[in-house]
Picture 1 (cartoon, rainbow over the protein chains, first blue to last red):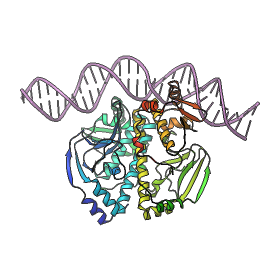
Picture 2 (cartoon, rainbow over the protein chains, first blue to last red):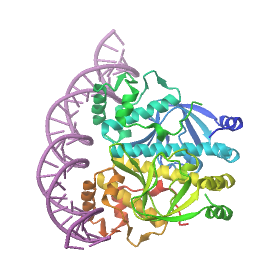
Picture 3 (cartoon, rainbow over the protein chains, first blue to last red):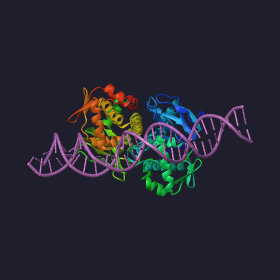
Picture 4 (cartoon, protein in one colour):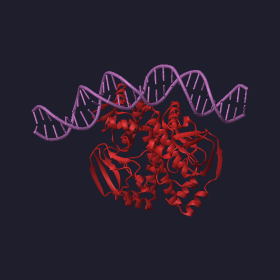
Amino acid sequence: VELSKTDKRALENLTTDVRIVEAHRNILDEGERPKNAHAIMDGFSCRYKLLPDGKRQILDFIISGDICDGHMIILAKMDHSVGTLTRCNVAYMPHKALFDVTEKHPKVAQALWWIALVQESIAREWLANIGRRPHAKRLAHLLCELSLRLEAVGLTEDHGYALPITQADLADATGMSAVHANRILQRLRRDDLIAFHGNSLEIKNIERLKDFAQFNSTYLHPMRRSP
Amino acid sequence: VELSKTDKRALENLTTDVRIVEAHRNILDEGERPKNAHAIMDGFSCRYKLLPDGKRQILDFIISGDICDGHMIILAKMDHSVGTLTRCNVAYMPHKALFDVTEKHPKVAQALWWIALVQESIAREWLANIGRRPHAKRLAHLLCELSLRLEAVGLTEDHGYALPITQADLADATGMSAVHANRILQRLRRDDLIAFHGNSLEIKNIERLKDFAQFNSTYLHPMRRSP
DNA sequence: CGTTTGATTGACACGAGTCAACACCAGTGG
DNA sequence: CCACTGGTGTTGACTCGTGTCAATCAAACG
């Protein structure tokens, strides 16, 4: 979906506020009906669900440029929560204004629809990943996805990217225990697929990692570009 | 999203053809760019992905009244496959015509957008289900979801519904082995939560089953009505 | 009837969760 | 400047859930 300049200008004028949100804070609660839409400008957030017994499933990572709650233009209530994993810059825009823009600019509505479909596609790939791939491939697949998505917004280095989240977060995203995630990461390092230097992940050879993870990028669709 | 009568008439005129598709046939292949949109009028189909090693993950069940490929109005390529689990009646409508309708009838576009969002929500609930719930609750949760969705289209009996799919299908939907699914179902029967009579599932007490499965229907959103 | 598909059962091995202890580091405050 | 703290990563021990393989049973079907 290509946006015209007027479309873009209409969108840019929506942001009323940009705030810093500390790590481990909630931006949206399940069941909530938010008044503002939120976009992450910087930092790592995630969608997640908390089960009654306290287990957490991370449903998606939200990185720079992603919108937290495009859904809420159409749907009534948040069906999951959104929270920060690191300190984040969050842009706020009134939902009503955004909705009005979609009515006047059909291309904007189509763009948001497109985003919803890509997110659906990502959720489905995660389903296959968690449901049917062995644990090492799951993690490797996730690291590949993050690599592509971060690259699209210019957040990758030569051979890797900053990954300031914990192993427990990775575990909750891939449906395994934190201890096990730790051992799997060790194995990936031992097999010389990845390495860590502080908070940043080094991918030794992206092709080998993709091969190993059975990673096929088509589910991310054409690909988002940097704004 | 409420559709006007003109909106509805525009939609109804789209169907060019209704065909019978045998069980275990593909309706859409991953990677394909279909010319027609497909709606299931009768029978059970599913979205699924096949991994290189032959494992199958079912991503969603498609029941009467569901559209297989609403995505394709916006996206370029199918990111998953769709196939029948039983013999189905499938309605065909040209994609281009459907797209034209969405351009002329913004409410129709919104309705399709809404469908996409609900499907995204379902996919995310499945993620939490597969990623973090113990196996018995997974299966129970799935049976609850099917109960509500089938009820919405009038396909439930008093205490249950026809479920003409195999245990292997249920296993592929919940990310477990077929043997294990069998044993879990036995446990659910022993605990007097469900029973089978031929192809039809009896739910002994839907509230107890929901309780056990930690089932909360809000992720299905307001709820689709019968057409 | 034979054949096929799906459900069921048992045996077995191993993956993966849990619990608990420890190492390491950065941040904090005295 | 150092002791203390809490969060994170790492390790080992132990148990049990689950997958795999293979055989058997049951029902449907041509």
